[in-house]
Length: 312
Image: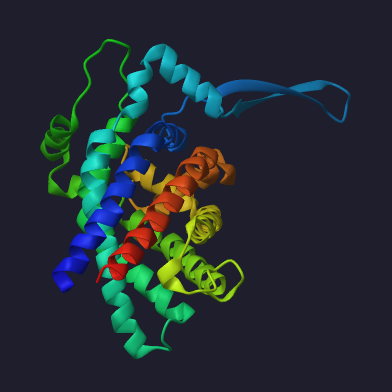
């Protein structure tokens, strides 16, 4: 039965995760470019009056917006560049979802025996443990994906595929290069914990409310899964807004030949050189991509688990 559960986790997470990855890949590329330190800042000059009445010109910069970055990619690199990194993303989605959901269910069994069953502490601890395992195993794939998305080549120029990128990282940085940004990923575990705490709480309330089918789980309808999708979307939106800065730090740590070496050192550099608003660059495409992606993954997972239990 344990083996069947693992295959079920693979199918539920892998299928829904793959669809979400393909559909939202362009937004993932835009988000990564907006997070990167390589983003070209447009210079501006602000005219201010001094105490004597003379005008003083103060230089400043304006960060390009989502549409400006999109237009730049389409003009200089072509539409195919919006799907850079999709290969390693697809390779990583199915196993990462399988690992995560399998680890999450096992961790819940463990923590239910240690804490108050199905409490917020159980959900947070289980989500944190599952995210730790998944991040540790999958970081090399996400590292290659990020490097491919940050590679800027003019339209028509040959770009590295996933295997070539992996070889280049190994040649220039060794095995440790594949684990750049892992500390930032660990910091991002807080986002997963917040997301699942909110989601499991909402799911519990939905099961007890008028939105749940009165006849019980065996006859759940489309409205129940729509409510679960909305709960997942709300949970991910809240968690992403709270924990987003670690995403920017992680992207900087994964940049090739960058001055960013460690998690806190990177955070300090960004704050000093670009201001605190830089920690939220790329947040809009992140929300646009992650919210529907998470809603699809979690609701599909719940649906397949429901169908599986029905046919036991």
